[in-house]
Image (cartoon, rainbow, N blue to C red; front, side, top):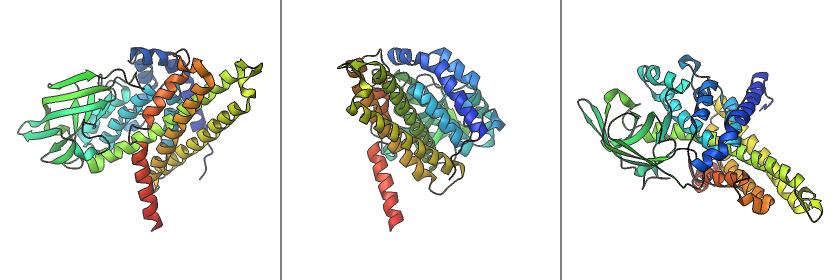
Amino acid sequence: MNFDLTAEQLEAKENFESFAKTCIEPYARQMDSRQETPDEVLSSLKQGGYLGANISEQYGGKGWDSMILSFLHEEIGKSCSSIRSLLTVHGMVAYAIQKWGSPEQKKRWLPDLASGVKTGAFALTEKDAGSDASALRTEAAQDELGYIINGAKKWTTYGQTADLLLVFARLEGEITAFIVEGSASGITRTAVTGLLGLRGSMTADLTFENCRIPKENLLGRKGAGLSHVVQFCLDYGRFSIACGCVGIAQASLEASLRYSGERKQFERTLIEHQLIQKMITEMEVHTSAARLLCRQAAYSRDTLHPDCVLQTWKAKYFASITASQAAKDAVQIHGANGCSSLYPVERYMRDAKIMEIIEGTNQIHELMISSYTFGQFK
């Protein structure tokens, strides 16, 4: 497995880093405090073509491979996890339509998703259906005009503003995927505020009351929502989050290096104290290990390796743990200053904790990884 980067990949990585530092990082604190995404940031994402990162060039996207996408999500995640979450859920919707959509659906929606004319959100989770997505209760009924959706969704990232919702509902008892335009009647969006982390991600609870959509908005076939569409989308989401976690860990490391090199206690800089050196060492090594797991997952995805899903599980599991521990250590190194919003490490810590929960909790990943490993052993 060769991880030497091509000239194209190196250039892309440098471009992503420059873009994130210039167009996203200056707004990160504001997004966190105001709990919204500024129009300026969205405009920059659109102009850079980043909302079409995983969409085929045929539909106006960039068509980047997984290795380049790993750099994108790491660098954006390093600057602002909320914006990385936009790339995640928007990418999941685009990914689903590109994989399971009809030619007409692809032609209708992918160009607008690629350009950012429309943004997408993934509406799966419900009050009683979190890790157990099979417990969802939202219903879809068919008539001569199309489908009528009734139910409620929780924790929908960018649900406040999304133009296109990928909604999962039971059609004649079978979980099915539907494309619901945000302008459809019968949708109520309730902003979710006061979250621990990802405060700029415009999260919403969604209610569907006799929400009518045309028959051509069914994605894939009846009953394939959970077994095919959801699992396919979550795999992409986990990959994005894993790479974003590497970004959080790297940001925590760099913030700790800056602070410990300047701050003096007992007439020595913090970095001269051995216990601080131990924390820095662990941050560096674990971040590097998490990055390698993400690159291995990217390589497996690009080469269609049979174990590519397992590699993504492992990357998401380890990278989320690494990000959370690195951010906590960064706060510890900053002391009381680390508890202040004047320093970004407290935001890193709050955002990192969310990563251990979304797109499959760490405990769910432990079950999946151990089950797969035991199956291979037998």
